[in-house]
Length: 264
Image 1: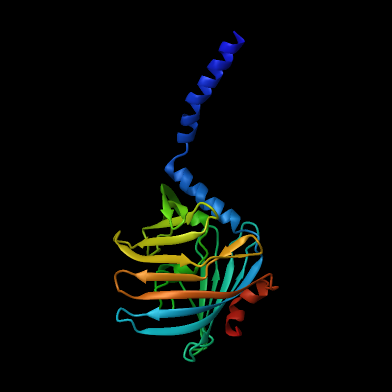
Image 2: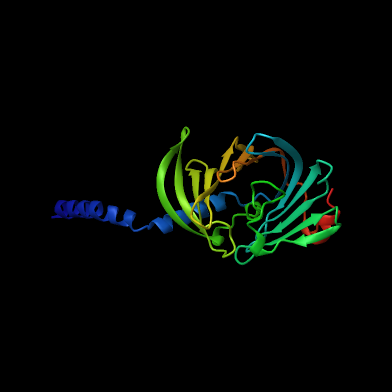
């Protein structure tokens, strides 16, 4: 009787197991992937990096800009804050973008224009506009907070030598320039490798490709190159990252509107 009971228990477990695996919906799995990626990125404190922005026209004309980026991790329940400062060329030197991301609700963004000596507020309804003539929109320059999207897992797919989760995310902000984004994220380290962006007409607008990841503090993966290609205009923008420095002592005082005008 005992042997029979054990056999029935094993059989029952085999019958139940597939049901439990199927209990997770595509939406739940997509959200779980996004949350895990977010969890792995927590705890960095602050970092600074240098960046080269390369703008390319449809004809192949190129122009370059040099920037610096500072980021401060938000406290529990708060979003990150970032400051992007242009150093070259001379006509944009001193231009700075300050972003306060929030887990829910509208983010705050301010752009300092040294030629006008004033700070311009980037309203949510204008977030789909081009950031300094690049193929990155203002909303692309914000932290991608998990709660700002709905998710749907699509499939697993090879991405180079790795395997990627492929899932969709849908911006909840009514003023977003996108209806959906398709994300390729590797299953080994939860790094983004590619994102397809679809505009308000559901047409493919842009593709972001992320490569040359490097590991910092034995925990945090950061990109070396991000290329945004606009399929509708033929233009593209590359962001080339270097000189990452963590725990540099940044504080809230470095991310105020007043700090925009004295950013150096």
